Length: 112
Image (cartoon, rainbow, N blue to C red; front, side):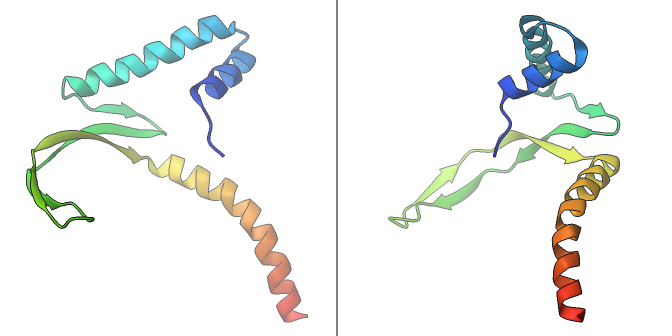
């Protein structure tokens, strides 16, 4: 299941007491700031969350998998996201709780 921008707007509105229209403007403004900074070649660091940066991919020859025909791919700049250690640990801890419950019952059954 995916979380959409509308889902994020709704959750933030509930948490902050702002209207959905106000929250949508804030979310849109944040995303526009990220896009604009990356388009200018700037990196964005959000402590405890991660960083957005731009990487330059070299040009190369690629192949069409159906026909096998080779064609050139120009060099390009691509955004990427690097997750922070804290965020990675947070996700692992929360998802680990769910899987530990399942593993625990399997391990208990194997031991018993």
